[in-house]
Image (cartoon, rainbow, N blue to C red; front, top):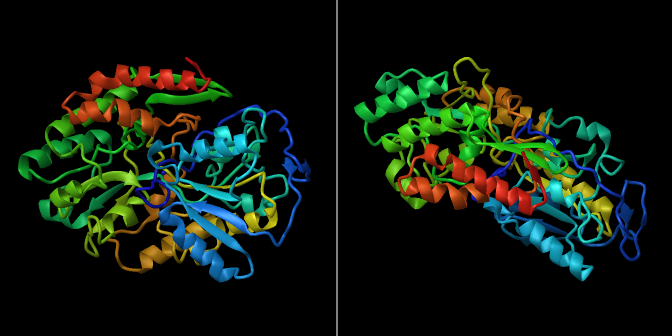
Length: 451
């Protein structure tokens, strides 16, 4: 999801209709003092007065504050960590340390990644799986059913739900309507139109840009939206990786053209250099829902003035139905080791469903549908946007399911393998085989059979 970013980037990773990972989970061994509970996993002895420890990234501090204000009787200690941003894998690494120690697990963890259920639902070295099962009584079915269709797919393993989504990160076409009108340009409806406009902008208005390709989540914006078969999780431990398909090559070729002419710079949207060079010069920007608050309507970033920013539907390749990638969308986990499951459950339900946070405070598009509807209305009523935000609602149902949520981090692979190449002047098309090899190698390290 992100985070350098907000709603989950924030990183990276999520999307409303991402493919659920199907894993076979063996029965969990019990920890000392644990008993077979009624929620589908062994439970520690419960103490409803026990303090809970919640791990969050800096951008989720508002969620903790909102919960404390609404629930002053619940004892809670918040610990800030990086949220596993940019594929750091810190969540998993730290839980493995606690597994070896046999203690120390937090009660609730926020992650900016969408692939954590793939490992958190499984035993580690014979130890009980970290993530508590949520859909066998711990969280009410009526609550789970009200999340946007597909939102909980990355949290679902073998029919069991192991996390709740904080926000969705569907990609839309952000654009500066005022600049489009000033230059006399028509909003593109296809990726082919998008490339043609980028070439025209390079000729007629050099210095203006139509996107960015300097972040580790670049493939989720452009390659995923082209149905590139780079991350097809097809079974419990199988993945299909083929970056040589026409779908991969068309997106890579388009980016090569626009990178070369300067309209899609290979600079991170979070870099000071990006703000310095491109403030007031972003004409178009395919990107996730959370770009609105993290990039555009942010005094520390592009700070686009009121009445200029619009959101349009995801682009389609000619002859195809439009699909979108998923760039984050944070996840909340309850620990199966918690000694106060009632308080932990209360916290994760509040921060994912309550208006006090999701509507009034959260910067990203809520995964919980009733909150999302209210969030959209609130954003539109503020008068900031130049268009309505209905594109976000539609895009939430258009995330391509052929890009799965495996254990390994695509962001980390891209950042290590591809980003240095394109920054150094290599074409993305020429790097596709190297990217495929890197994905294959990492998947095999994590126990996947690669097709």
